[in-house]
Image 1 (cartoon, one colour):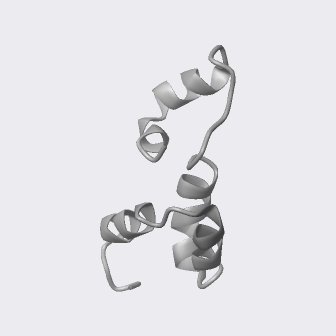
Image 2 (cartoon, helix red, strand yellow):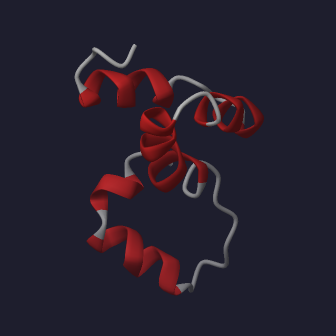
Length: 68
């Protein structure tokens, strides 16, 4: 899997639904964890009030918003 381009690894990771499974995958190696932890674990499921600074953050960070 590590020989694949980062974009393909990102798409594979995107298909993993459960946070528990994401964490297990992240723990398999450092290269995969560098994709999963900052871009998938923190932003997979969000529960926040409608009036939150988080929405402004996601507007400016579209790369994170597309993973929700």
